[in-house]
Image: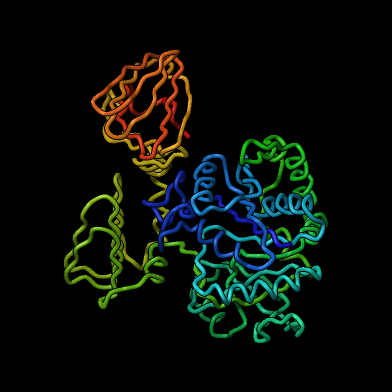
Length: 472
């Protein structure tokens, strides 16, 4: 059996202001009606022999990940929570340990959650060939056939050709190569030479191997990572839909990528070139590249009006955006931030995010309208003496919480009907009603549906320190 392992951590800072720490790019809808995570899962679950996905993410994003899987009606084998980031090698080790606990012959398919693959048929053909080689103990990586010189990716040089078994029944035109070497991100002149030579592929970060094989190689090359991950796995605990790796054990694990830790050292590595419309959507220019354009080379998303605009990407999320007489431009609007940049220089957006983080700006971390496992919470106004939120609770949700430790809350319903219990007293809670909730009392809110329940919350105090029960 093949277990897809979806790596769903990371923040994707180059797609700010839409992508943020609490809403990274893999959880956004960037090129369709499904998020990048949902597309990644859907792409593999229909492949013959593929099992339910194992998703690895962090604590901050766990509920959104779980909700997005539920939204596409995909059950998971447990969402694994990393207590802190340790790169991809520990994630692979944990996945291998989980797979071996299910079957000693398990194959694992490692996939980042934020990649685009347009030709799924070619992708599935490559998976079938990869599975044959992985079952024989090879460590398979998928190299992307480059269509341009790219300085933002690492490269893999092809070694000798490896024959593909005819009995596999797959397309015999799919080539397989030994790995000559991995190379770091090149400068532009070197990237051009790599592409023109035809001997190099981009390093995609996608792999397939027997769980036992990759774990054996890791024990050989990075035993300290395997040891720490074994402790973190065996001392971990299930918590509803989540498996929590032991924090103390995982903290001792060195940070390393699977490329450096194993693939650059092993003599069992092979590469399958993949030409299936792949992109990691790592910048706004990349989004523009893969999007359908008008006759002037523009991509407009949302409420946009443009005249005499050429080769530009304009994304309006919350309000009307207009443009006149501009070229080679990226404009991305959200409720609390606006990005304006040259289309060809959007890799530099990371510098903006780094500056925001250094200044402890909230805009680097979360949106004004922040998705929550129970609905959404939008900050709509604030001042030195108050903080106002518009809160949406999905149908079918019931939760309990202690009220604010020192402040009195004011709740004003806007739409829908819920049952509110304060202390021992329950009441019907709907529009034209309002309540005051005293500090340190037990509160329960139940929305039996079928519509969302929406209300305003007014919290007195310093808006920069909004101690609030609804934090995820």
